[in-house]
Length: 375
Image (cartoon, rainbow, N blue to C red; front, side):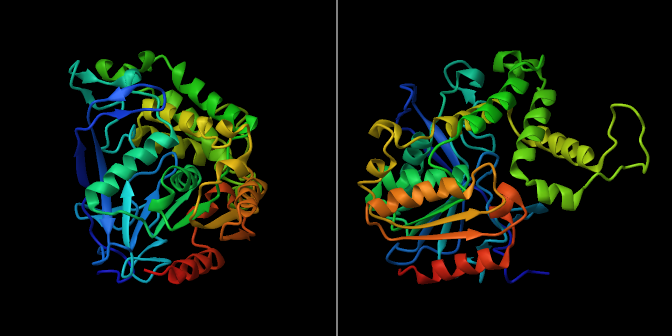
């Protein structure tokens, strides 16, 4: 039965680009493709487009499901759809798989036309700035001169912020959720431990594991398990798992005994089945490198001097990876520039993953904000 609140069956699209793209690192790709999905209709004045930027392990599949796989539901389906907070009856929503990804866009697993082999470790290290440039080119292809809004959580929120710096005239509203103006040393450390799990996996083969017909599953599993711990809060893990034993008794061994161990291993296995190890390395490095204040002597307020968009900054009390204090740093920089900015902080137990949850107060705010956007 069709769910009237769902965009329904969706189809991924591909845009091929033959114009070279120079990365911030200095590397160049002569051509590339971006896979994306759209929901809703672009209005006559082309003023109702919203770009959804994905986080580390996200994809272009933001909402709806695939005809041949009804269980493959978009990662933000609770947010995007007819009558939902980001209402596709009103807005034309675009989701894109970032360059360097592993879900159709050109990335490490793509065949390099010059060698006939997968790019592997030779794929350029990407930054948030590089993604924004490639997304702007996709917007050009779709005939979108200016987005009504750009929204994202976590790494997606960082992309939304970067848009306001690099293309201020092309975005009217920026919605930055559960993000930070740069990573702390602790966050960089978490990312490096995750990368080391992959880099030291015997099946990684320096990033050329494709030629060996193997996957560095052990490293990917460990990286995801570590990451997942940081996405949850202590309260949510205690509430969901506590110290519950699977068999009801101690086994005095090193196999799975506690429910939390079983959950993490399940998440690790599932991730290793669907994600590319080289892409994981790229995404975490993009997180590490994001720091718009760096080129302004560490002055975040100076970094936002050219921004003109209206902003909504959202944080969650239980998010210890990107705590509300980090969102408040962004808020201060925006207020220092006398920009139109709203700030909301929600009391939740879900940790960093709160931005993905169906919290009624959070969703009502998002609905109200989108309804306030003039088209």
